[in-house]
Every structure is written in C-alpha cells, then in structure tokens.
Image (cartoon, rainbow, N blue to C red; front, side, top):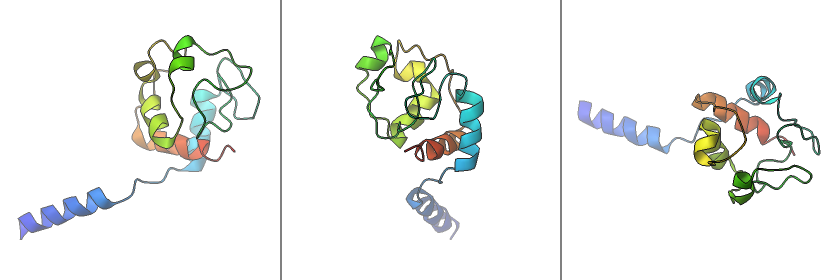
Length: 121
C-alpha cells in the first residue's frame, strides 16, 4: 500500500499545472531588481530596453534601443518559458549580453516576475 501511495502521489504531482505567479509580488521585484535599468512604460528605455510588451516579443526588437550583438543575434521569443530560463542566468543563456543582472535564482520569484510582465500590454 505504501508503494502504491508513493506512485499515486508522484503521478498527481507531475500532472498539476505550474503555480501561477503573484502579480503584486512580481511588481515589487521588478521595481527593486530591474527598475534601475528598465522601465515598464512603452517607449521608455534606460540602460536596458522597456519591458512593456516583452511577453511574446522577439529579442533585440525594441525600437530605438541599442542592443548588444549577442541580443540582436539571439533569435529568442520572450515567452514565459524563455523568460524563466533567461532570468536564472542571463549571461549563460545569451553569452555576450551587456545585461549585468546576475540572475533571479528563486523559482517562485521568477514566476511572480513573469506573471507581472504578462500584464504589461
């Protein structure tokens, strides 16, 4: 019976959807972790490009922003899965990027950030 319970629990856990991110917490994280270099308003670039409309956008495509060659050539689409991987370690995913952010290692925080970024439309 114990073996059956373990197998059943494993099956249930792998079939559950990913935990939805907390938009309010994501807003706070973006302000504190990203706000020095990025704005969330359309057309407002700083050291980094605007994050407005990032979800679904091709990498290196914000008009008027001077991207590194690495970001221009990355050929990524910023969907939730790509953003999640990138936010762990930007320099590992896009070698040569000028983004200095070391990464957001906490999975829940990344989910929160992505949930917030999805609202920027």
